[in-house]
Amino acid sequence: MREQDREVAGWTRRQLDPGMGECRADQRQVDQGLLLVHSDYRPRLALVEQSKHDDGGGMVITIGLEGASAYVTRDGEQLRFRGGHTTVTAFRHTSGERRFEANQRAAQLRVLVGEEALARYWPEGLASLLPDGGARQLAHAATTAACAQHARALLRATDPLAVHIGVLSLLAEQLRALRPAPSAVPRWSETDIARLERVHALMQEQMAQELTLDYLCAQAGLSLFKLKQGWRYRYNDSPQRTLLALRMQRAKLLLENGCQVAQAGWQTGYRHPANFSAAFSRYFGYAPKTVARAKG
Image 1 (cartoon, rainbow, N blue to C red):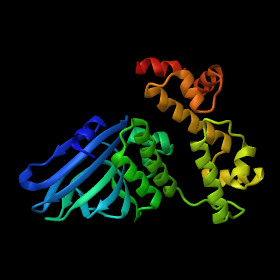
Image 2 (image 1 turned 135 degrees about the horizontal axis):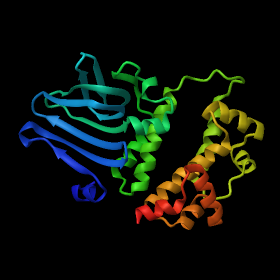
Image 3 (image 1 turned 120 degrees about the vertical axis):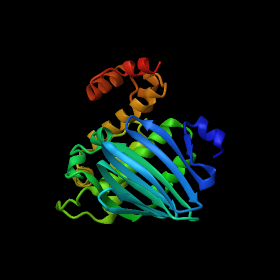
Image 4 (image 1 turned 90 degrees about the vertical axis):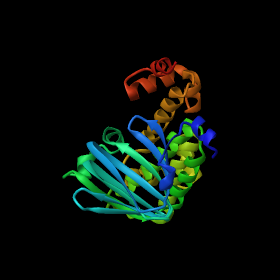
């Protein structure tokens, strides 16, 4: 993406002194407490950058695009990042140094999630992941195909809604992986899980339609019993509540991006604006028109 196009898309650039080499970081505020950063460093000499989080905490998802770097906390703990791998780190009231090797490229895409924003998607809060403060590596594994696809899309996306959805998709994948594997019975085969995930994808792709459980079962090849039981196992929720949550979050994003109330309702499966307004108000505790008015 050209620099001019990146600015129009909402990216701001921080670039180090050219004498230090080609070192730049573009960042984009996605939402309150959600920041997207694309860094691309190739320093001429070994580089150490100070990093401080003494005034807060949160989570960082780092997708290594190329090369490697390290982060050393003030307590001496070292976290490593490398291309082709995704690292999830929790931090609170800590500081340290980001380190880059001389003449080696290190390109990364990072999602920074503040503590308050994290609590919206991880009800147990940051303390459950990091009880003693400092910094802790929660996960480090080869980047999945889905994660890599989201990363590529985010690097070229210009639409704020697409960026928001992409960042939340990345966050959702990493948070799901952090939860302990449920030991529920019966055991579910990989085929069953794939069918459940197909239903979840249909909910997102076709939420403008009238989605009944019978329809979703038929599309995925599941019985109603298996859908409900499997959904509890896979997503720890009911299909109806999951669909409602997806619709409400999408509707809120549409309203925040200038969509009219009736249009937002139509695009999320509500054919009558009054029904949409009632559902939205019950879910969020305020009317959709207040979102549209605030945006205006």
